[in-house]
Length: 311
Length: 278
Image (cartoon, rainbow over all chains, first blue to last red; front, top):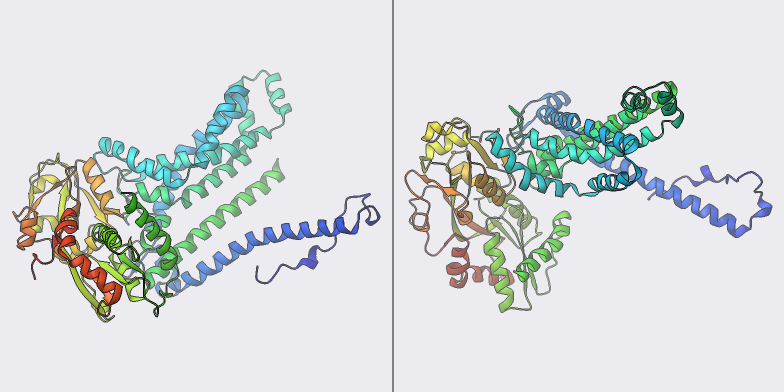
């Protein structure tokens, strides 16, 4: 923290009612104030981190927009940096293909898991299934990648007749990776549906399935959409697992078993040797990723607000 | 093995911060006891084993070896973050102006490898070029079964890719649809378990899991590389800033000694410089 936060803004201590100055000692007062400021500093570190990264990436990546032009950078189809072609449209499309496919596979699986955990499973089963799902979130992504490369890829190579790199392999790996994120948040959303709504549904003669499908899922819709967007953010930003099974060819794959390069993997592949404009272009790619994740975060906020207003 | 792992870990721990903070060089003045050697992953097995043997003979001296790719090696010897930059490719015209001194330490041949189940045994250099440029996309065009060719390429930091591109493709671009893998081991592993795949790796890393095809009717062997008949081969370099001196010279001479050349270099599948061409 170079230029400290403006502490005077929060100087006025917020004291619970009936807790006047007379009842707490000076030492307690200072301790409380110190703690409050400590937590403020913690929060500021996070904000400063985001700001610094954004400034740095922007500062290093901006020249590429000036050099090749925003439209030919974002809209150019050919990524061949060593001969000076810096079009990342292919990479954007590939990232979206990878993400949407992973969502198509992973989201139903995850929402199904959430429904099972919240509505179907009894406490004993839940005690086993939930930690297992949570453990999925704790596995480092490089382990997913290694698993995909060593175990999954040869199997897919065998039945597809190709190399086993490609969208299909990436979809499977990413679907499993985003499952815990989507499942946990969707489960929270389902649980926060008031018990009375379930009881009302059963009282109307609805079966369990009808209650889940017609009542609970619509009621938890906003939370589930948030969960899916968060999962999308995880999928589009995932790098280590993808770089190991994507095959990294800078073209739009002609099929789901053909190698492809994405926005994140290009950074990992090229950063060790990129120099000059090539390096700047990689920072430009980072800016694009930054903007994409800002869009995700913003859309979650907008949807949540919308949800609160409607529901 | 243990020692080897240790050297590698130490090298990584020391080199990563050094590489990250480009620009800060090891301080001259006092006598150096630690030498850093960075660069080609192809040269890694030679440089690493030589470093261990060197340390056994001179226990007060250490040589730290890291494999980060030829281009990164040349880059770091140029800006002073390492003492020797190892490279499996020649210098570019621009790099030639940097005042680096070249010491060839071994010869290497690049083998075009296919899956052992692939009936194709021989390719001409032209056929190999057509395959990797994406002009030939089916094995039946080069005497194999009617199967699409699964191209496996290396990343652009790879010295092997650079050499293969120059020697076989004549600088023509690779097929962009090829899978790009960041290491020799990965290329070999993928070719070993995908029947229709083809890739290229240093002859030193060819093992029984893959099959090296002959190029222009010359099978890649030590003999054909040494006498220069095998067309896809190259020189492995140590680059230093100025003529090697002090610890750098000590280590370079050690690598060129017959103990290393005839044992370590050969074990790694390369050829000693003394017996090679040029």
